[in-house]
Image 1 (cartoon, rainbow, N blue to C red):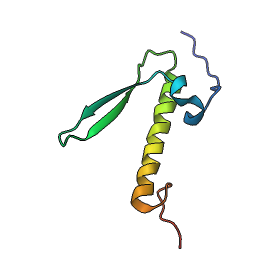
Image 2 (cartoon, rainbow, N blue to C red):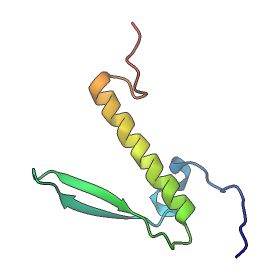
Image 3 (tube, rainbow, N blue to C red):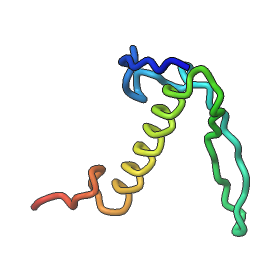
Length: 81
């Protein structure tokens, strides 16, 4: 097996989008009945690098949205007054 290192053509989740990744979304409900979504990655996929970058970007976006709701700032630091 030969290992090749190269830079991705599209390096951010925003550039990759869901069209460039081959993840699937599975949905289920927790004990309280709340709907949960999971991104499933196939580890033998040809696009594993894009898949991981896309899912990471989605997780960051979700965390920033939650921070914005809770403390009013997307970066996790309260706004200076």
